[in-house]
Length: 150
Length: 144
Image 1 (cartoon, rainbow over the protein chains, first blue to last red):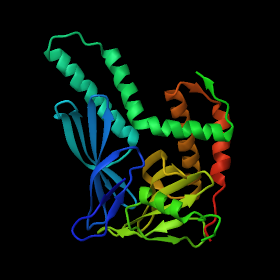
Image 2 (image 1 turned 90 degrees about the horizontal axis):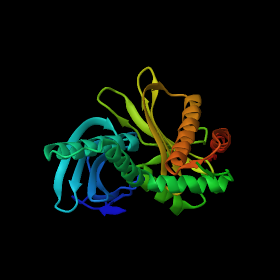
Image 3 (image 1 turned 120 degrees about the vertical axis):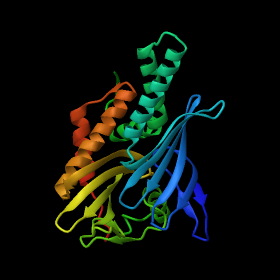
Image 4 (image 1 turned 90 degrees about the vertical axis):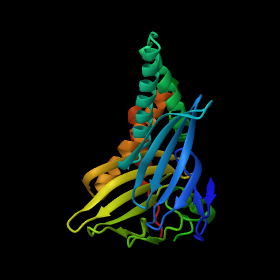
């Protein structure tokens, strides 16, 4: 939870329901609350910029950063893109794979595409859905639904 | 608002901090089934607002756009009662109706549970999930 106060406006409380660690926020005169949040995915940090309104939430920016040296691996800003966890997860996944594959190519190294794919998907699922999955498992238990290993 | 629906005021306040911009004003719908936010009217004359309904297990937030001819369902989000977002979906040109919401909410929640089961490599009975989801979403609490 982040509490932000600026420009003599009332303090704004930001809690992201998707598991983002909110790092900065502002309450705009338009009524939108804009904030940035981070997700750590191993040695990578994903920074998401979000604009939350009453009836809509937009994705305004995405940045992928190498944690060790804070180097920006990729970033982009968006207009009129409605925020959706799965959409963002896929964008980040696609960009991460691009970055890894391009780097290996430049270094004239073998590219284990399937391995990269699997590892990226596994890491992103954990980063984006770990809390949701825990909640769902709790719900299934409360409902008395039988759970078996796949 | 009924005591049973909003017995834990601090819990509801915590929920609203998560799902709405801070300071959003709310009122209860005429039929007493939903909380309605204040609206924002665009230059084009369309008014955007949200409607929130409560079941025993979930909170459903509808993003609504009211135009001069049609009212559209722009988005649906389903949260647990402790503020965890479980499922979200946005729509384009989906005309608003209670049937559309009931259908979409049930489908979204079922898919969210099935996707979580797949990620966690567990097997669950889809028919059982669908049945349970429909029953629990039908139990909407009255707010007045």
